[in-house]
Length: 168
Image (cartoon, rainbow, N blue to C red; front, side, top):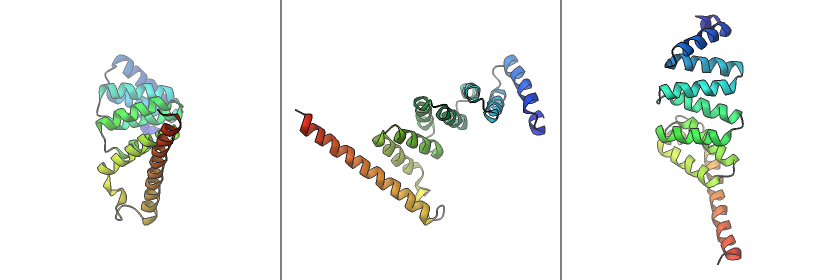
């Protein structure tokens, strides 16, 4: 009721009491995580979302929320780990694929990013559907794919060049 009325402070106090008294309350942890997130308490939100995940392993949205929060907290390696775990459980989770690919590109792991994006197409071929996307969106996706392709080519060539100059 407090949440509906916009009284997050009252709701938070009740939820803290609830999860203290009943640590198995999935809904309590999830609602508390959402309040912490809304208030900017990212670390506390992560902790509560993790509690919710421990109670409901199929709460894939909470995995994604944790990954986003970890990214915001500049804990990108942990975010990559969380997203990888999520995609192992639910490979068709498109937003997780995009975030993971972006994080991998940011850390210059281009080959793995390309693999992640290519795998996403097997689960989400409608990414190229004219019914779902404009030509501009499809062209943008194709350009990104082409860039990924050329990055792979450069990586392959650089490996050959390094082996020529420093190889056996």
